[in-house]
Length: 183
Length: 284
Image (cartoon, rainbow over all chains, first blue to last red; front, side, top):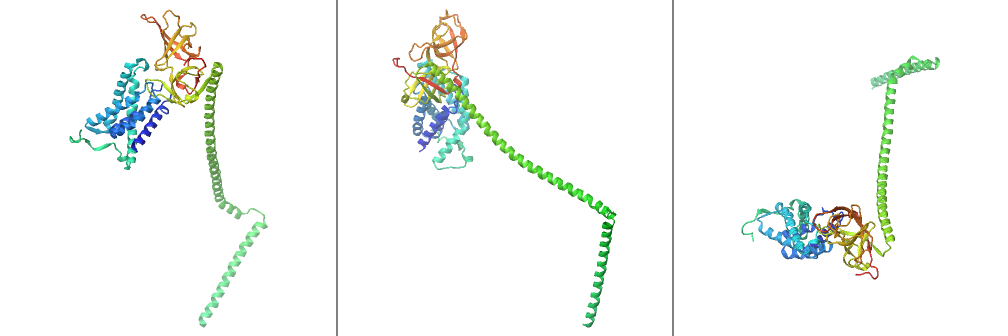
C-alpha cells in the first residue's frame, strides 16, 4: 500500500512540477518536487521499497523532461543512495540538519550527473549555471519541510497511527544515537 | 344596633351633601368655562395659560417625533443603500468576470486568428497542437503537446506558430509528443540570412537566443538582418521566419563570425502550436 501511495504521490509531484510550477518553457524557479520524495524515501523508507517507488517516478520524469533517457533514474538513485548513506553515518538524527542536507545533496548529484553527460555529449546540455542551481536548491530546502510533514502524515495514516499534527515532529526523542544503534 | 343604625343614617347624609357640593363646584366651573369661551369668543387668559404651559412640551415632543422620523428615514435609506451596495458589488464582480472572460476570449481569438492566417498563407498540411507540459530541467528545453502518432505525427516534423519556427518533434507516443524547442542546445537548424542568402547553422543556447554558426567573416551581416529556414534538410519548409540578428562579433581569430539571433517566436507565451505534416516525397 505504501509503495502504491508514494508512487502515485510521486506522479502527482512530477505532473505539478511540469505544469503548475512551469510558468513558461524557460522558467527557472520550478522546485524539483520529485527530489523531496527521493529524500523522504531515503530517510524514512527501507531500501527495497524506496527503490520500487523510485523506478516509476524517475521514469515518469524521464518521459516528461530531458532528452537523454536515464538522466532522472541516475539522479534519483544516486541521491537516494547518497542520502541513505549519510542518514546512516551522520550521528545526529534531527530534521533541522537533514533538510539542508537535501539541498547540498541536490547540488552535488546534479553537478556529478551534468559532468557525466557533458563528457558524452557536451553540446546537448545548456551551460551550467550556479545561480540558477542555487535558486533551485533553495526552493527545494524551503519546500522540503512542509512536504516532509505532509509525507509523514500520509505515512502515519497508512500505518493507522494518526496523531495530532503538533506531535508530528519528524524526530526521535533522543537526538543522538547510542553507539549500539549505529551501524 | 339601634345606635349603629342612627350613625349610618348620619354618614349617608354627609356623603350626599359632599356629592351635591362637588357637583355644584364642577357645574360652576363648567359654566365659567363655557361662558368664557363661547360667550366672548376670545382666546382668553386660560387658553393662553394652557398654551404657554403645554407649548414647550408640545414643541419638545414634536421635535422628538421629527427626529425619530428622520432617524427612521435615514435608517431605512441606509438599509436600502447597503442592499444597493451589495447588489452593485455583485454586478461589478459579474461585470469584471465577464470582462476577464472577454479579454481571455479576445486573446485566444487573436492568437488563433494569427495561427489560422499563418496556416492559410503557408499552404502546408498542419496539425494544431496544445502544450500540456513543460520541461522543468535547466539543461534541456522541451515541451509536451497533445498530438501523437495516432494523429500522424512522426519524429522530426517541424513545429511552428504564427511567428515562426518553434522546434521539432523529438519523440512520439500514440497521443502525445515531446517537442525539442529551437532554443534547446541540442537543436540545430539549417538557416539563411534573408538579405545575403548566406547559409548557416542555427543552434540553441538554452536561453532566449540562438547562435548562428558557420558564417564566414567575409559575409556582410548586420544587426536587424532576418534569418529564415533554408529548407535543405527537407523537414523545414524554405523561408520560414526564425529570428533577427541581434549581435555580430568579429573576433581576430577564427574563420567565422559569432552571431547572436533573437527568436521571432516569443517562447515565454507559447501555448498553441502547429505541427507541419510530412509532405509526400519529403525525406524521413
